[in-house]
Amino acid sequence: METKGSKTLVTAKVNPDLDGVSCTLAYADLLKQEGTEINGVITGSPQSEVRYFIEKHNISIPTRPDENSTDWNKFILVDASSMKGMPKVVIPDRVVEIIDHRTGEPEREFPNARIQNEIIGAAATIIVERFIKVGKKINPDYAMLLYGAIYHNTLNFIATNTTGRDRKAVRYLETNYNLNEGVIREMFDFATREVEADVKTALEDDAKEFGEGWKIGAYQLVVWGSEIFSDKKLIEESVRNLKDKMGADWSFVNIIDLEARNSHIYSESDDGGEIISEALGAEFRNGWITLPAILRKQIMPKVNEVTDNENERFRSKA
Image 1 (cartoon, rainbow, N blue to C red):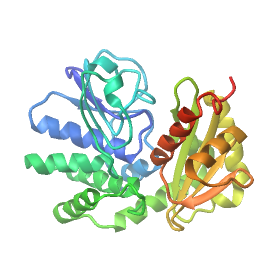
Image 2 (image 1 turned 135 degrees about the vertical axis):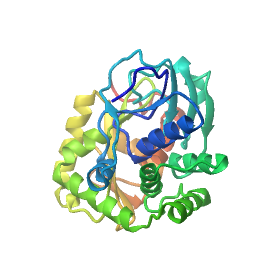
Image 3 (image 1 turned 45 degrees about the vertical axis):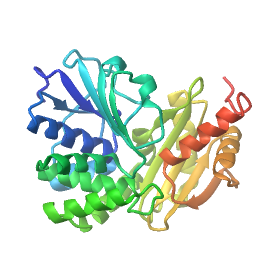
Image 4 (image 1 turned 60 degrees about the horizontal axis):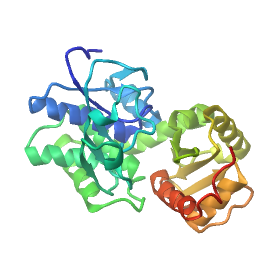
């Protein structure tokens, strides 16, 4: 992989999902077309929906270990707006641009960054809009990744964060890059098989951390009519073990079943269950609740609001 000579890096979180991968590669390519010397590189291991495009469509994804480097002195973050989960190479004061789509205050951590952070279905939608605005062509492989990312992040357009802009971006990609929903169903089926084959690894690959002064392990899997729900004990054990491995105070997993259009949420602790119950207005039974499909990025702001309002009451024990 070529990195020498470039001083600006476009990147997403470590072990990124398809939205992070597609935005990294496509936006770096757009900036290159405009004459910027830049690299778009993925840190860690891409998640299962990304591996579908690698294995079934032979799309090359440049990756690197999560380690420090002096190859870059400027950074652009995509599908990310905080330092949690970011590659070690990223220096907050040297982040010059952020493109994201979630609730947050990135200006606090990145005072020198130009920020576009809008509550829409996918950061990939913003990247598609950037190409359209400047009249540049998207690399066909990257167009396919962006297409899949919008579907994946909007949960096949059933998530409440879906907007008309996401749908418009998808129509543009279908019209101009010969894409259709057949690839989307194949993507979800492939990802579901990978989750079923190794639930523990799928959870660890996806693991995210949240919280200030305490650590919440928040895990998410997206499946299509999966059989993994027949072995909830394996899921529960995996979440508990991963919590200990990560050093989290408490953890939960959100498993989204696209076929049933719902979320199955498991909390491994009573404290976590109490917080999530108050945040989502639902009651756990035997550690689980089932709700209409909701994304982790939608759950966490509600959880943070509860913990902030209740001060130390819900803070996990050290």
